[in-house]
Figure 1 (cartoon, helix red, strand yellow):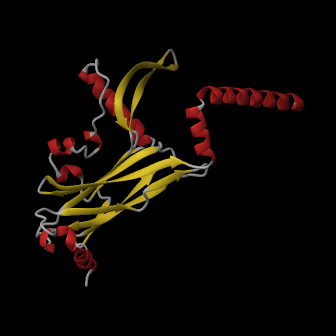
Figure 2 (cartoon, rainbow, N blue to C red):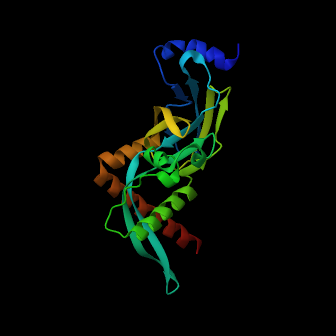
Figure 3 (cartoon, rainbow, N blue to C red):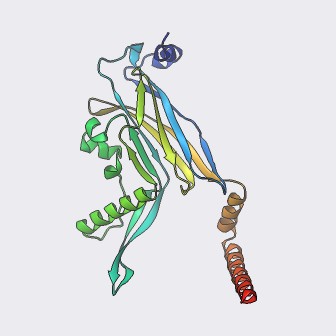
Length: 253
């Protein structure tokens, strides 16, 4: 028995009374710990497409997976060279923007779905709802949105892979998403979308926790719970290191 048929046989109870396809997704890790030696990770998103009656459609459906980090406010600053010096010339605030966004699909999104539906489900970087702070002219908002997308793509925090999902036998799928070392901590969502005839016909979500552990977690908790003490300790440590460096330099000279 083939893998796809075997999986369908095991999951048959999920299809009882179902009139639409069902997604059964999972991720390789529900929790990622960030330590001092953390250099990034790779998430494997996989699962199965269960069709009513176990019958595969004549036309293969497509899959898109999105991993999204917690939203956060951000101020984007625009620099210009003035009198030979790069200076902040303008800025724009976004009330909320995903701290991390990665999408992988079996085909390019523009081939799978129309612009309106892509915007509803935020499929693709051009369809992210960035919630600008308001008060700016449309041209300025578009310029700063493009700047934010470019900045986070260069940081590895925003990614697109139009051929990043493999579908085996029309049933089993898998995709890999790279998590960079500078990724923010928090609760992430891994969303899977089944797309057929330019429509999202099924969707499912899993959560992933990314947090600090060990000494990094202790420092983060101390900074949050005892901010004044943490700030004083950091200042004293900086002064101590500065005096130590000055003393060592004077000894050499």
